[in-house]
Image (cartoon, rainbow, N blue to C red; front, side, top):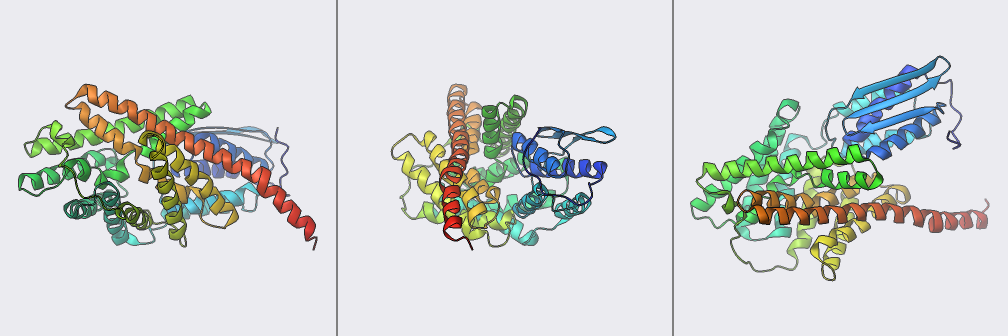
Length: 430
């Protein structure tokens, strides 16, 4: 039984309403990409705040089980949660509502209404921002990977087309599974049609940027993180789902190549070297951040925070790659991004940490390595399996960076920030 202090509440809420509120809030947390263990902890904390000391919560990526005890006995709900992802502005609103619920300052019935409003709210930048933002973030990633004029032009065009496909699919859950295959087929067909017409596009670096929002890097990393926490069912299911997503993308790329008369081996052919531009990757990080801000409809006053976290995470990754292997550099990127996100949220009144460090997951793109590895398996099984081993190493390093970064933030908060705050209060008793 929890002994944490709960603020006094007005009349005890209706248990059935509170149960529904907890379930829908848990489902919203899962749609934010939160760890299942963290969702369970948050919901138990909220139940305790509303006077329900005996609560049990079990969360899976697509289901939530909640049990509450009141004067009439035990009430239970077990409901399926649709696998979806919220936009960044919706994520910020969900976490803000969760903060209020943890102090029992919101009526559960009002909380249900607010959750329904969050689900219905339209993107801040509308359809144009959705499509143009996707084109911009694609160009940003191309600047990081291979900033040639042809590749940047191809990235902008292909990013716009994929953004348009995602817009047309919005609200159509039946097409959400085949959409990555369709998008990969379209991108691959257009890239190889351009090559056939003599346009010097590098397929190795032109195929990945337009598909970056489909790459399950965050899902794979979160699955590995949950495995580290001991959540075997949730972790394994996310890892399997992420791998299936990679296979679907690789299958779409192979179909597109076949449509234009190429073989799967041509998918990983590199067009050669290019002149290195020192400032291009850093500019690419900022362009990528702007594209994420528009495409995922980030909350107001969050662009500068997102850009700061992206730049510092990218700098840490680049610096670490000079001393360690590139596969290990992701650890240092997330070691910086994770505590910085929490620091911005709790000490600078910025957006929720998920809003600022989620783009770092997408920029590090562990899924991009996986996509290339699965694609190689279509033509060279040994090379593909070797590449997948590298992917596991990369994902593990990023997951550990996230885990250690969160622990580092808690340690600094408990041993440095909190004592300094107490000293300031003693020195200024007024």
